Image (tube, rainbow, N blue to C red; front, side, top):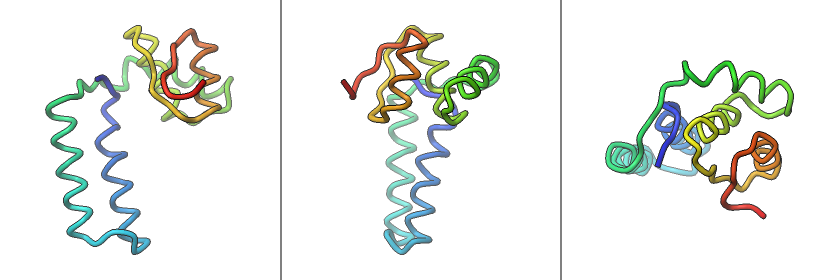
Length: 105
């Protein structure tokens, strides 16, 4: 698996927000963080944003998607790998960029 270096921060951010909303305890969030760390360290190769940012800004500007989503599309395109997404707008944007999408028809 491949991801931009933001993936771990995004996963941990979800845990923090869940604690703030009362959906998780601090201990539960800690377990989420540990699981995310384990996953990223053992199964995910991360890539820096620097080499992707120019293309991602173009995608985000022209397709009306977030820069975060555009970074994932740019990475998939650069590596010639499929993108996993259930988001219809991201899926459409990725396909326009020539990226195969897994997860949504």
